[in-house]
Image (cartoon, rainbow, N blue to C red; front, side, top):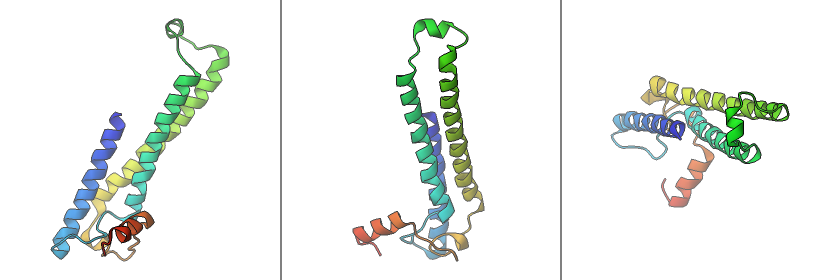
Length: 140
């Protein structure tokens, strides 16, 4: 839960910085203003990794319930040990991907310039879901 709050703050700060830079260049905020496309792609990746990790924790809690007697033991039973290692490996990979995607978004905050931001940048690529949402709402 704390990781989700950190992600939210990083994403919000990066988006606000991008909007502030886009506002300064034009005098108003353009429709497709935001961080670079690669940073916008990293945001849902990090979010999905957190959701995947939560799902793995819930499934692991259902499949491998821990009783009061097992908490007192220092080593889990041999048959559960390999299964718990697999769950911990999946959790570790998910955390690694989450931290990597968050680092990408954080780096975007430091290297963005008004010339590189959508829609001013040379590689302007509106994300498909943003483009469709703007067209549905009638924003051009």
